Amino acid sequence: MTHHLVVLGAGYAGLAAASRAARRLHSSDVRITLINSGDRFVERIRLHQLAAGQALREYPIRSLLAGTGVTLLVGSVQSIDAAAQRIEVQTSQATSPVEVDYDTLVFALGSRADVSAVPGVAEYAHSVADAGSAIRLRNQLAALDAAGAGTVTVVGGGLTGIETTAELAESHPALRVQVVNDVAPGNWLSHRAQQHVHQAFDRLGIDVRSGTVVHGVQPGRILLSTGEQLAADVIVWAAGFRVSELAATAGFTVDGRGRMAVDRTLRSVSDPNVYGIGDAAAAQVGDAVTRMCCQTSLPMGQHVADVIADQLTGRTPTPFRLRYVWQNISLGRRDAVTQFTHADDSPRAATLRGRPATLFKEGISRGVMVALRHPGPYPPAVRRRAATGQPNRGQESLEK
Ligand SMILES: Cc1cc2nc3c(=O)[nH]c(=O)nc-3n(C[C@H](O)[C@H](O)[C@H](O)COP(=O)(O)OP(=O)(O)OC[C@H]3O[C@@H](n4cnc5c(N)ncnc54)[C@H](O)[C@@H]3O)c2cc1C
Image (tube, rainbow, N blue to C red; front, side, top):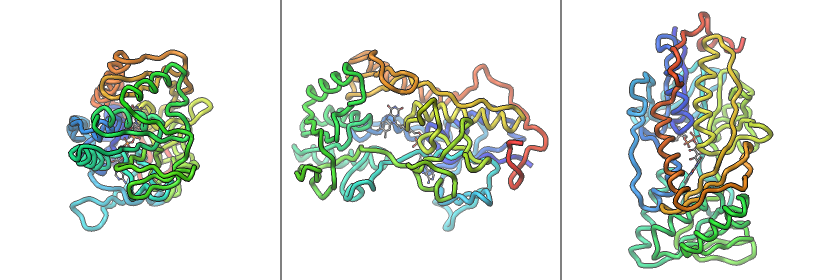
């Protein structure tokens, strides 16, 4: 009987995990199913570009999986029954959910915009956190452009907020773009990097409104903590991500933000048959927990594949280690800033700015796609046979 490894979510983390596990394990011992809501890989780190009107390259997931033997099941995960080790997936073909049993589960459902934190955001604001929302925003901006004028307000001065604000301002010079944030956008960056962001915002004609908190969103306006109201034709919510409730509902231990709590081998702290990776999981790295970003998700996906392969082949898995090196922030297509960081993600003084940072960021973004196509390990490891007597569905934990 083959062991069934099921990976939920084909983002940076889940796709890397499934492809790499397939290269580490024998298909006669372990079959791998990857479940995702769509059949296209979404390059989330470019969604602000999509919203700004640029065409993104299409990546059918099946072509990224070519030759791996991984089965893609397209459908939306509805529920996880941890006791029965069973997933319910709603596909477009079936009227009732399909049941998928697993021996080992990897939870990699990523994140989406946190539109429930402030009243009115879900109804009246756009986001760039998923492809559908980015396309709706793109269409709205095109209509505003066609009208010849209008105001776009981005709420959020973090990485996504800065990138989105700059991208929209550069692509829509006829529109007035403003950003609203409680503190100055990019306030965690080094002085030099902050200066560069502010200069880029000035050059692009972006109005910055900081020192105020958004309390509500209504049609065509934003309500501020100061009692003021800001008129806006299009409102973009870029003030935080939230994760799927599925991990918490299934009874897995989660942190205060609903991210699956995992140990140093990325295994759920409450269920030995389950692993959590990417934005959807919180792993300890040094004194901090992993940041929600591609820079974390891809290595988590690669590492969990090695951990599972080690577990199934009777080896001792190594703990996940991550040293952050930089934060890359695009400021439109012709400018960027790279903030080099300490291992714990805190900023160093060193930065790259302007053209070198633009080229660097583009190179990294392309490199991510290369890594997903060629998930390693390098040099190629021999496909390991599962240790005899490895538990299958319904048997005991792998950790014996
Ligand atoms: C505009 C933007 C710019 C960004 N820029 C950067 C950057 O420059 N650098 C960086 O490091 N990070 C960046 N990020 C963050 C980065 O994109 C995320 O951290 C990363 O995508 C997380 O990867 P993941 O695999 O955990 O999840 P995702 O990439 O979100 O993948 C999760 C997958 O699960 C699927 N899924 C979700 N729910 C279900 C369900 N119920 N059933 C079936 N499938 C489901 C989704 O469709 C998706 O395919 C950016 C994010 C945004 C939005």
